[in-house]
Image (cartoon, rainbow, N blue to C red; front, side, top):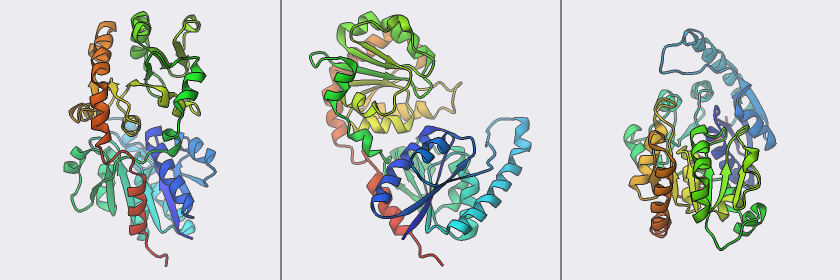
Length: 357
C-alpha cells in the first residue's frame, strides 16, 4: 500500500484543500497520516476525517520584529527532530505540504530522510513558509499564473486548487428550501471568512433594504456576529457559521460577496459564481488578498471593492454592475482550465512517489 504524509496548518485555507487530495487518494487505496501543530485548526479538521494526526512543535515565522523571534527558531529545531522521528516511524513514500508554519520542520525532516515533497501555494505570492522551504521540495504547485514568476521554473507547475468534492455537489433547490427562498428572485451570498468581517456585516445591514429590492440575501456573519433584530426579515437569512449546508447555499447563489482568500475564490471559480471581492487591507494582512482579487478582476471573474471604499452606496453600485455582467463572467469562467486541481495534483504525487527502502 502506498503511504503519504500530509502537512499544513494555521488557517483553514492551509488545510481544507488537503481534504480534496486525501479523498481522491483514499479512493485509490492510499494509506495516509497527517503532521500538524498541537493547537492549530488542522487538528480538529483532520481528526474529524478519521486520519491519524501527529503534532509537532513549530515556531511562527514573522516578517516583523518580535521578542518571540529569538525563541521560535528553537521550536522549529525541536519540530524538525520530532518530524524526523515520525517520518522514520511512518515511512511514507511522499509528503504533500499545503503551507503554514508547521510545514517547515516537516519539509526539512523529509529532506534529511530523502523523502520527496510536493508543496502547494494557493496565493498570488508564496507565503513565508513556502519561500523558506522552496529549495527543499521536489515540486511546487501554484494556482495563479502570475505566481510562476516567483517560483523556480524547474520546480513550478500550475495545477489550480484542489477542490473538495462536497463543495461541488450542492443542490440549488435544497439551498432555497433551507432558507425559505423562492426561484423568482436572484440569491446573493455574502461571507466574510470563518470569523466574519465587521465592516462588511455593518455595511450589509445598512444596505439591506436596497439589497432586498434586488436579491434574496444569505449572510454568513461569523461566530458571535449575528443580530437577532434581523431574524424576521423576509428574504434575508443570517448565519454565524455554515458547514454542512455550505454546498447547497453556494449552489443556490447567483452572485457572491466575499473576502479574497485563495481557497474561497477558487471554489467560487469552480462553481462559476461571479464574485464581488472585498480583500483584507494591507494593515490586516501581508497584502496577498489584494493581489488575489486583482488577478481575478484582471481575468474577468468578478469585481473588486476595497474595504476603504466600502459603504452602502459603493456596495449597491458594485453589485449592480456585477449583476449586469454575470453572464459574460460565467462564460469566461467556463474557459478556465484550472477549475479543480485535484486530479492534476494526484497524478504528480503518483509520479514522484518513490519506492520505500
